[in-house]
Length: 307
Image (cartoon, rainbow, N blue to C red; front, side):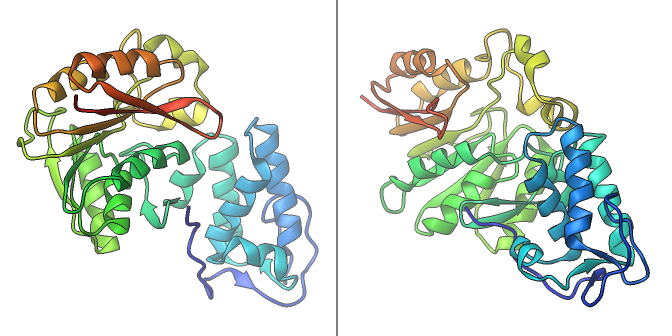
C-alpha cells in the first residue's frame, strides 16, 4: 500500500533552534516547538480519548500539517512547528481526540495499494482488507469488463485500472455524492474508469464479465459496537444492511444470477457472513467458491465462479 506522498517547503515547517515548548500539541516559543515535543502532547491527548493508535495518528497528522513525509519527523532533528502550523496541528488533534474523526478525513488523503485517494465523508474510508477485492479483479482475463459495485471513493475500480490498464473497468454507486468523489479521484489520477449511478444492477447494462462489490454488510444490531470514528462520521448508508447484514448482498446475489455473462463475482463480507454469502452465490449459479481471509484471519471476501 502506498503512503502519503512526501512534500516539502509547506508553511509552518521550520528548521533551526527551538524555543521553549511544553507537551501541549503545538505549544510554541519564538523559534517554534520541536517536533518531538509537539508529538508528545498530541499522543497524550489522542491516547486519552481512547484511540487505538495514538502515536501513528499524531505522526500522520503532523506530517500532513507540515507537508512532509512521516520519516522526516523522525530523522530531521532541526524540524519544528511554527506559524500557521501551530493552530492547524492543534485543530487536527482536537478533531481526532475530541470529535474522534478518522485520520483520513482530517488529512483528506488515504493510500490504497499503489494509489493515493482523496477521501471525505461522502464515502467510507478505504480499508486494507478491501484490497482483497482488487486482487480478485487482477485475475480477470485480458480485456475483461469489470464492474465495481458500491464503489464509494472509487478505490477498488481505480486501483484495479492502475494495475491492469487492459481491463474495461467501471464503478457504480447509489450515492451521487460518492460517485462525484470517485470521479474526482479518477481525474486526479488520470485513470479512465467509467461511472454509473445505479441501485445495484438496476441501471447496469448486461456487459460485464467480472463483478466486485463492497456493499453495506453491518447488521443493524451491531451499531452500538462500532467505534466512534465509524458511527459518528462515516456514511450510514454505506454501512448498515438490515437485521442480519444481508439486505443488500442477498438481492445482489440473486440479480447476478440472472446475468449470464458474469462469470466471476467477489463480494466483501462481515465477520461470520462468508458461509451464508457463499450459499447465496451457489444458489445464484456461482458454484465454484473460495474464501479469502484478511490479516486477522477472518474470511473477508467470497469469490464465486459460474457453474
